[in-house]
Image 1 (cartoon, one colour):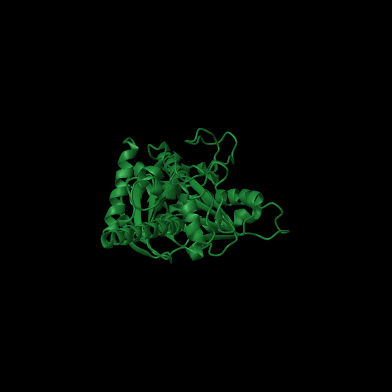
Image 2: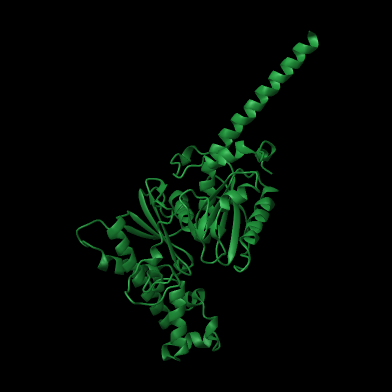
Length: 381
């Protein structure tokens, strides 16, 4: 268990320390303490927790299912606390970082909205900080993943990086000069809800034609199931694979069959990749980054997806042929990126906490020496 628990109390001094974590990134990550921290990645189906060292290495990892979204937020918070305390029994944990699949406010305290959880304007950081004796940092999971790829992965040392996470939907993050750009209200990077087809497919967000309806895991599975339901001749391979149970078709299955040469599955991944390239070209026109990092579960298709994306990007890029092209790379850290990034961001909070905690301990020691000196003086008088 962290030695800082021995010195930490639940009073106003500790609350002040936690509140002083600013709304901006500390760019001095290289001078942050090289101490182990815990990263938590909360998704719609799983909660993953791990102890991560200063070099991005995972020392230990735990995983559990996300409690049903119909349950109260307290249930998810209890799960997080249990995982952190379990890891703290075997590691000296100095801070906890949480990457949440949802909108996080600019102060990185409240989860404003989480589509897969019952969090609505939930003060997650303050609630957990009140139960854990170490500082807590909360951020969007895509922001955390982008930070990890910039620090340790495919975007290492890039000055202007855009991360795109392809999963059930599309998430994203912007990182410039060592800072995650969260926007005025903390919700920048929701690229999946750019409109690319006016009047197109209905999106759960309420709008039509959002990018994630054409380039995401949901879009991939939807197209495959529609072809299978129509008993299309091109879908016979996947129909046979699921023995006619169309509801069993999944994204990883489509990727697997594509690697084995199934023509329909290859074509579906190409379609998804082309739409990905169109969206990336739009982002390049707006943000002009040096690198796009593609992560998330769908990116496991690798060149079956990213190859067509690169081609479509070059075809749709504004000013093509007369401007430098951004590099498009697959993420290197895999599904652990959000967890590693959250832990590394938390290390910056641990730095500030350690300083304030050390000053508090020093004041206590000086006061103890003063009291002892007074007592010795009175005894000799």
